[in-house]
Amino acid sequence: MTELRARLRPGPRDPALTKDLSNCIERIVQALEEGADTSALMAEHNRIAGRSDIPAERYESLYASMSAEEAAEEALAPVAECVPGISRGELEALAALIVEPDDFAHQTYYLALFEANTPHGNSDLFFWPDPDWLKELGTNEPTPSQYVDKALKG
Image (cartoon, rainbow, N blue to C red):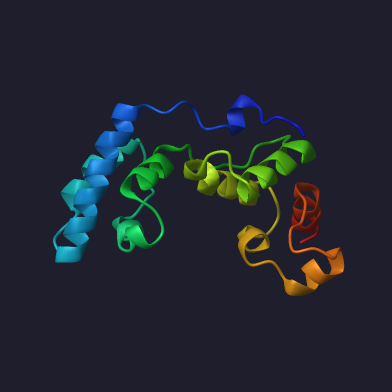
């Protein structure tokens, strides 16, 4: 399978930055639970994460889906974008990382990157695939190549 070029991979983690952001997210969660203003906490969050596209509401039911540390790693991942010249092999590598992530913290990033580089929103392909499509394939576990075929067909 094709390796992802460096531009498509999240960079190395800074454990201290992850810890600082995780602590901030825990305080945001607490403030949301108490109905308190989160604007100062979100300003700190945005400064640490180096981005401002994540709303406080993202953390309202955080612990139902991930830990504060996982949320921090997600927020520290690069913003997914359309990459000119992305190859089919790279899309297959992304599909493989979504289905069997080597790093759960970056699974959301890989999914967003896959969606940004294929037509139509394709997250349902991985988590809620069309039963008729699975029946047509004769499997409940499509290959990365089959995910890409389906995503490119629309």
